[in-house]
Every structure is written in structure tokens, then in C-alpha cells.
Length: 114
Image 1 (tube, rainbow, N blue to C red):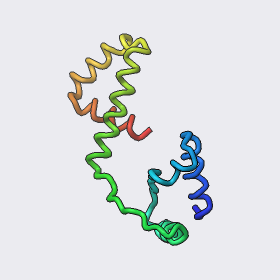
Image 2 (tube, rainbow, N blue to C red; image 1 turned 180 degrees about the horizontal axis):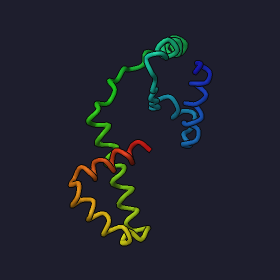
Image 3 (cartoon, one colour; image 1 turned 135 degrees about the horizontal axis):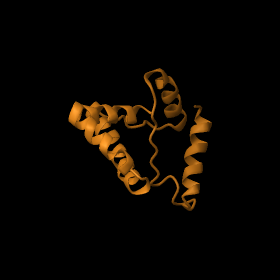
């Protein structure tokens, strides 16, 4: 991403939120997600903006896992109300009796990886 592309995207988001020109820039925050191989481009953007970006540590594996499980749990809760899950209730009970909680853990892994 070039400086022009970055500035255009930030400006577009600010405009789409309906901020007036005097409000833009005074309280706008952007978050740049990048890999280690993109650090040179980030430095170029910082240089072009004459502004250093605050560095944040990446999220921990635990927080990523919790976020994924929470997202899946919300989807499952909605599915219970949207679909006829009773057809699978006996199968679910059988799998739990056969495999215990590990079967639910495996299902969460499969759902998270989709």
C-alpha cells in the first residue's frame, strides 16, 4: 500500500462517517495491520505523513481463541433459533456420550477453521 492509497482509504472512511472537514483529522484513528514483510512500506507511510505510528503488540493466542469461540457461540445461538436442530439432537447426545467434551472441542476447531 502506498502513501496515497493509505491517505485515500482513511479519508474515504472519515467522509463515509459524515464528519465535517474541521472534524476530520482532529480525532481520527486508523489501525494498520501488517506482516513483518511489510514493515518497509509502513515506514514509508510514516515518513510521508511525517508521523510515527504507535506500535501495538499482536493479540495473544489465548485472546484470539476466546474471540473465535465467542463468535462461534453467537452463530450457534442464532442457528438454534433459525433452524430445526431437533433432527440432530439425538445424534448430538450420542456423540457426546461416545466422545465426551472432546467432540465439542473438535467441532469448535472445525468451525473456527472454515
